[in-house]
Length: 455
Length: 170
Image (cartoon, rainbow over all chains, first blue to last red):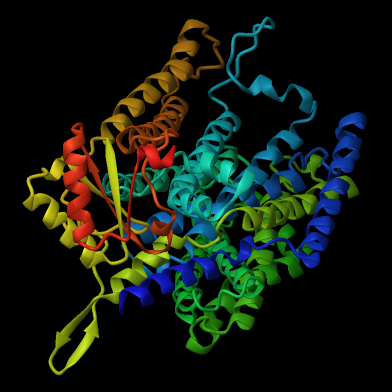
């Protein structure tokens, strides 16, 4: 490839990968408006709860955790895979990771931010949420560090900040690239965000090593966050929760829903911004294999736990399991179908793994099933706890449903805004691989492309 | 003072580095600007190891200390006996200490990286927008105006498309 071709190619690749940052179309405004309207409905519902009290929710005795905590666990789970998958693929030097990184990392930041709202919404008397923060106040209040709920606050804040830093650092060279293409006030803003990046050899070296170190640090944080969420449940004596397998089971469940969500978003982004050139069937194939592996693991963990419960046949645990089976049989069936049967059977076939339509269906089903799984963890266990005379049931109110729905809208709204203002593909990462492919070497009678190792 | 030569091609830029070295400009004063990273030695060879991980370690240690002090220290200062449970409980203290250690280590990595990369830096410096589309910049840093002129001539003869200094940026 000669010099002119290369420059043209770099310019063309920048142009193509920044297609999401084109001025918004009418369709984009409509989408943002609809999502904004759903968020507004959620805000209204929250205002009703704020002014009336928790009585407007379906939460009751004994089911004191409802849709808010279900949503919280779901969103924390969803946040898992973005940064973690990105970090693992970076450490394992998987070249195919490059077009996926940014979208996955952004997904983590927005889903953990949405997740962080739910404990606050669930608190009741939300206006004094800051009592959770340890600071010397005139009331002499001090948070109880022995409470798993405080572990949550610390862990989630660590993960939000860590994921935000991971996303920002990865985006730094791309922000400089956008700065160089911008004019006027946009140039000033992107200039501020790029903080003077020029791409010197020293900067690249620190960037590369620092990103690897950050990846090493963020993986244990990601595992700890979902383990702590699992311990919110497992350290209680509630039947169905008090289990040693809960933390790893939650982590695997989180990775399953996260990987599925990354694939869903990849499909949408690819279609919406015409990124077929960069998000190739290979990427879907590899991500699907990953999803297949975690679905198998999740199924193994789930059936290991159910088998132990079934074999032990402890009266209260069997009561809980029978209640779930009798009252939520359809939900249980969808969960097994969506998390085990469909993905494991479907993703064994290469043709399915490379078909975006089939994958869209499977990954959406996985996350619907995973939401149901969160519901089945929370509600049946609390409905039939150890004391039979306070057994009950739970139906979410319109307020809870509106807020849960608004959370989905908020996530998609934030993601939509992100794609408009920031590069959704890791441009320099993709171009780095292209540069490596430019090299050619004589091998026998042919000149073949060489791929330089990253480090 | 800094002078930047912009080259359309990696090979030309590499030749320019050779020429600059040949006229006696030390490698410590030469660096490259590019929109993608190249392995060490393709253009210039880096002189010293970045030590930003020291920031991670130092911040991590501080975070662990803060976490331990918050969870164990305050429990010890204001003891609240609950049944036969210990005042300082190992698992909660461990979890809080671990999370704050990791949080501070991540922040320390960021601070260390910025320190080693010399960022943020909003001062006007020689830079060319063409670098974003694949051009390569070769930057010579020197205190002597005479060396700037020598470097300018060397890079021109090596095929630099254009040359710029800090004054041009202002």
